[in-house]
Amino acid sequence: MKRTRQRAWATALAVLLFLLGTTLPSAARQAAAPDFDAQAVRRQVADQVASRGLVGLSLVIVKDGRTVLAEGFGARALQGGEPVTADTMFAIGSITKQFTAACVLLLAEDGKLSVTDKVAKYYPGLTRASDITLLDLMNHVSGYLDYYPLDFVDRPMIKPIEVDEVIRRYATRQLEFEPGTRYSYSNTGFLILGRVVEKASGEPFGAFLSRRILTPLGMTHTAYEPDPASAGLAQGYMSFWLGEPETAAPEGKGWIAAAGALYSTPKDLAIWDAALTGGEVLKEGSFKLMTTPRRMKDGGVSNYGCGLAIGQRGGVTVLSHSGAVNGFYALNLVIPSTGSAVILFSNLSSYSDVNVVYNQLAALILPKVEKSPTTAPAPKEKPRAPAAKPGIPAIAGPPAADQVKAFVRALQEGRVDRASLGEEFNFFLKESLIGPAGARLKPYGEPEEAEVESIGERGGMEVSTTRLQFKSGVLKVLMYRTPDGKIQQIFIQKG
Image (cartoon, rainbow, N blue to C red; front, side):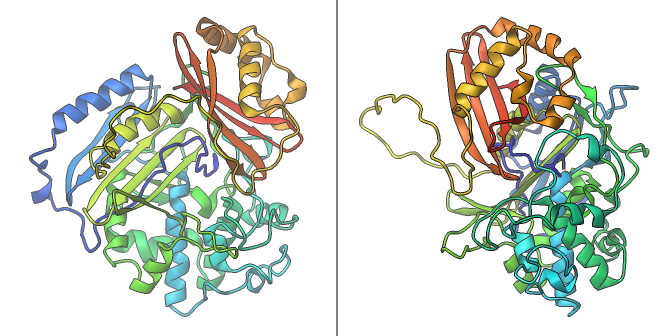
């Protein structure tokens, strides 16, 4: 939310993985590995926090089965300036989904439900409920429209709501596609799963999660739907169009729930990673299902299991997930075969800046990929837009790169074509934001080049990330457009 927000902006997937069979390193094993310079990493991260204007970060690095760094950087909140510590709790957004999936699988092991149960068993009034299974929901292949695909809290989401009302509003609409035919990230499916856990267990979701997972594992700094103003929690911030951090309003209770309402620390998440991959949470068959990419009806395969992304690098498996809610961004990556992990939480939703820091840290544990030797450098070609992927809607408007360039150029002159914006983004984009944003962008001058780096689909929209090259620097622009050509959001950050 802020999509539980597993951000489309995030170019680095947060990855969860840990050495299979490994337990959390004991205090006696906290010393850094000989080839790991903890002091250098501390200085590097601290420098990035300062130079990129981040508020606070919390970090854990596990290398070859040993925790080599667990530390906080920056401030828990700008007001008061209390420092982030290793025990400061951050919202982790969609990383919650792997906990929700594990709860479903635990109930399946208990015989209380089956992953092949149809949604109709629990919600008979939802669209095509007799054709969609719980596994479809966990794999994001149900076709239910995502209720929170954007990166800002719109007017409806400010107010508290019953989870069942969110489900009614979004899962009674026409499906986006035939179930099982393609992958499309949907928070709606995980709200349904959270309620299924409650119906099958007879307990509130948070109570079941605590009893079966959090308490047994000793995750004392992890909480479901805590009061955001509670002591020990970081305050979330957002930065709009290169502006200074501003306090971010949290989503109303009920909107993110089992799709992304957990707060935690990297230390607690490392406990979870080790327990999950070490067989302490699920039986072998359940864990295998959780970490198996979904095969579609046409034979294609997604890179997603049940609350986890599954990838390969250098011949090793990497499990991952990112998450975000308004004002927070969380990344988690684990390599089971080496017992290595990088977990990074931020209380500023400046995704591009946080990704830069995260990618540098992930390089410390990811296997090196050797490039094939060449006898001569290949000729430089003009960058091409990424090939269209299945499910990306046709847009009644100019190509993404052209629209981004035109939007930024107009903004530099203090103008926005409001007729090109969707209703909620039009409301969100106050006139008071436009002038200062234009002044910040104007020194960049005319873009020399616009390259679409990625293009995908989310919530029935085209999602593009465009790299704008200027003489004085680079900007990254995330844009969401509906088929009618309306811009539903456009966020600008430094490259």
